[in-house]
Image (cartoon, rainbow, N blue to C red; front, side, top):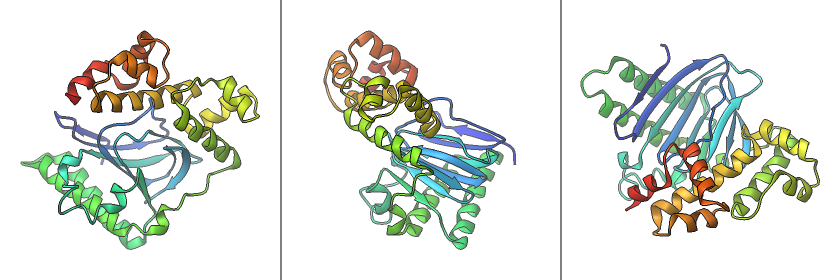
Length: 278
C-alpha cells in the first residue's frame, strides 16, 4: 500500500501513512488532538517533552494534546509509519472510556513496546484503518474513527506500570541536552539565549548549538520559540488576557516579534486562537 493522507474538514481526525528512505519533521509540532504514532518498520529518534528516545519496529507512541514533539532519522533512516490524530470528542473521557484510558489521561505520552500478541492485534487494526482510508467506501470516516478508538483502548489495556519508567537516553550527550530542555521548559518566560545557557551548563556555545540540534531535531532558538508559543496558545484559548500581556508573560519583548513567530509556528495569528477560545 502506498502513502496515504486523510484529514476531515474540522481537522479533528487525520490519518497519514508513509514509507520513506529518510524523513525529518520540518517544523515544530504540537496540536490539540491526541496522536497515535505506530512505527511499522525501521527505527526513529523521537524527541518528546524533554528527552530523545529511540523507537523500533512495532513500537507505538501515544501523545496527549499540546505536547511538543519531533521525529528524526535514527541509524537506519528507512522506515514505515502510521499516524492517527484524533480529537477527544471521539471518546468520552468523563464517561465509559475513563477507566480504560487512565494510563493516557494521567500522562503526557505513552510508549508501548508490546508483546508479539499485542503487536499482532495492533498491526491488524492499523492495516484495517489504512484499508478504509484507501477504499473510502460508504461511512469510511466513521468506521476508521471507531477502529482508532479501539486501537487506543487496546494500547491502554496493554500498558504496564513499568512502561512509564523513563527510558534511558541514547547517550550522555542526549541526557545533558535533556537537562537543558527541562530548564527551558521551566524558564521559558525568562531571558534565554544560547550563550547564557552555555555558561550556566559549563559548555561551549558551539557544542550546545550542535548537540541541541542533534539530540532534539530543533535549533536552539526554534525550540525556545516553540515552547513559548505553545504556552501562549494555551493562554489565548483559556484566558481573557490581552495579546501584548501574554506575549510578555511567555518571554517576548516585542508584540510584533511575537506575532511573527506565532504565525510561523502555528500557521495562524494569535487572534485566531482567541476567537476559538471565546
